[in-house]
Length: 390
Image (tube, rainbow, N blue to C red; front, side, top):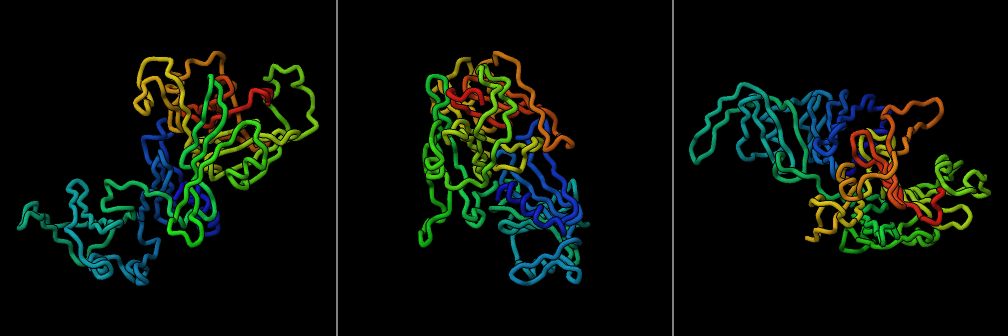
């Protein structure tokens, strides 16, 4: 399950869930898990920073929740989650792992670990090569973890379950295809629910969208958008070299917003053809965080500098920019920008404040890269040279 879905579920329960904390590494967002903490409920949702998929559910205050397994409660106001209760509900398993530093014992089942705190009698060597840990029947769980696989230490977030698709499509990857230094089109590899009656839960769909494609072309590949947004004005038009940049348009350009794909597509209001793509990375600390899923895009470029950053397919002259590539590596691949960036300050209205600060937009040919203060990509805008005034 994506962090986008977790946040939407929490928002829908605003009458029950009164406090939410978002914990992430602001300066190095890919080096630490993204944690959504519910302090009043004693629960943490831990997500991988690169995939942004739910990896672990931690329950650290069992007094605030009721827990059941196979229809029977093992933790409630009237049932204390003791060692005896756990073995009664889940059966027996391998010996627990003793942590001498924290004086805790972790008892693990497949996809589930219980942490007990207490004064244990621990013997590191016993018969059959198994350590001995004596846990009293009255010792209670201090926290538990729910995860995928056999090991909490080695767990990784699983692929999104089919139950989470809910009729939507998601990006497996989006290739930005360039020719002669200019972006020409996007090649999509999409994941969707399998057809009714099919033995396959997930089906793969591929398609190409080019600049100049019609609305019908786009919906044939991607389906209907999540939302259509009409631009009231173009505040970036002043940066255009076009002599007609200040003329008021008779037509309103509009976006197809695909939130589950991490993608916006801008259409010309007169011709109704594609003139711009915007690919979102959905980093915490950005103004649009949790509005979109992360777009798993990659851009193949020719290496103009020495080094092997992002090397793919064994070809040293061909490198790739992804949603997780930082700005320093982008410059290594594309070269230093020729001009200083446009500083972008976002706010939802004239009276609101953006707590995340400004971002910086750098231009390369028909590509604009929006960079956050921590030097990670916030979005990539790809525009048709024919409409470079947009």
